[in-house]
Length: 296
Length: 323
Image (cartoon, rainbow over all chains, first blue to last red):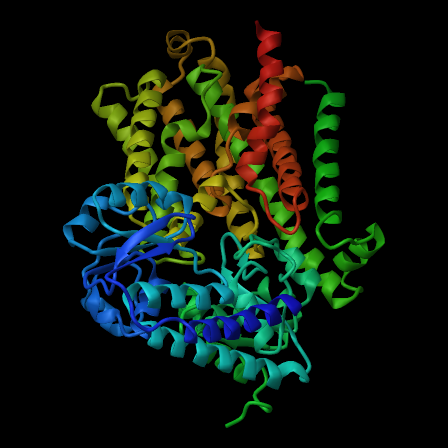
């Protein structure tokens, strides 16, 4: 719990620091990204390509969505994003397609797969930054960084502040409640669970529950069915179609939570990454897990 | 093959099955396992033994039996010690069917069904290609047609996966690496039928395969319909392989390795080689699946990788004996 509390404190601290920042921005700014590269970017770019659905969502949250000229094939949220041109995958992107969108800022996911694309885009004199947005703490850090780069500092601060307050408030409300042990189903073959390396595991803690696979460092570890039975979760989280299949399947019914029909349906479309909806999602999850305490 | 060697193979299979049901991520004593089997233990123990371990062990045994028997018959009919079930384009066809199903959004039991359809389609295509090339009963032409159909299927898989979502790629890759993790009693019953029918056909053809081993001309001179026997072996082999692929994905090396192991025990007639390869193949896959489950908990290792890891040293040792 301490790591999460530290993350939330950092989030609040980050918003305070942002508030102390200077208001007048120069024509050009430098940003250090998660590859450790320092990049010169034009202040308030007007043609942005975001090749990570989470950063795309964050750009909309801070009011820079209308300046997007490119996204990945996997962007779904918000609905307005469907009008932005689809430039293909977010990992190992098609650099030529990105250049054809004539961007003045490209935002990549900071994966080793994207180092080469970043190098090529910068060689073509397109300011390119890469960020990892995997944990709740990343959300605050990257939102504020995007705010600085796009010139939407105040909106970024408000977003971080609002989400931070929601998360901290939810954590306080769930602290005294009994914490059920939860298995969050991700995939059937191979069987994948939400692991300790995922922001969803952090969200479960905020919502007043314990992930039975929190000790595994991967975000979506592969597990054996027997190990899952051994961990004997109190609650299973899955999509509506998976729930129906689980309840009817003799193999899934070896799990006590499934036999006792404690399979709760949670919208899995939030698994993009910790976006601005992470606060609202934590509240929705807390309401699902503790309906009495969170009843409207 | 002497009775002592038969006993050894049967004993290996029984030991593998007992170990497979007894060991797992959840530590259970042999007595708890026994009571779980009999249904008078804690509900969790009954569920783990009866619904998770037993169907899984039996499914692995059936997969091994099917691949072992198919490999033995194909090596005999083609007079090629490198022949194996996947060479007929079956693996490529099955993987193509499954990958296309996953890429189109199919989940659950639809994926192995698509794999089964792909496997049968690939074998039919292989036999058609061989026939068009004029080599209906010619083992070399059929094997080459199988390689070509397999290569085409692999190219189609790469095209389908190139632009696919990461989760689709992961699911497809996992399926191609083989796993008995999704074992259910329904899958065991279905595969048991395929394996029983397939092995029965091969055993009926066993004597003709013995004669084929003397050469096609000699066999024809002795009254064997070479083309019909070869086709029978291919069709039965395809049924066995497609059934196992649908149940557990691609489990490599079993069909190639196990017939060699059985011949090393002194089996000479194809009735013994096919029966021995079914039993030894079953034991090998049960042991490999046990390793896949317990080697790196709580993660599962891919079954096909384990069978290859087990198979390669055996095969290298065998090669040394041959040279």
